[in-house]
Image (cartoon, rainbow, N blue to C red; front, side, top):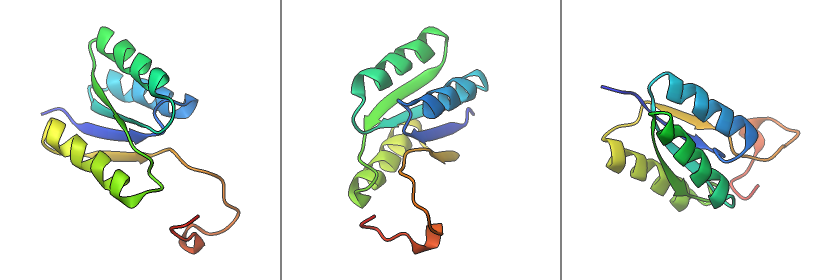
Length: 103
């Protein structure tokens, strides 16, 4: 059974590079994006053209319900989830444990 990965921020540079690498390892991918639909869909087409399996899903992960919907979509699409790469985000100069949900 192929492994399944969700990548948040998949339409950006690091996220796209990660998706390409995991695709070469045989992962089935859910490419999460918030604003860059065209980039995410272009990456999805690229991965599929190279023989990979990928879908896109729009989610603003600063909203807990949308983050949960992204994970739910991955499980509904592929039956399970093995890896979450939480690549999307903003810079904070503090401990992760000190970041509030509002931030």
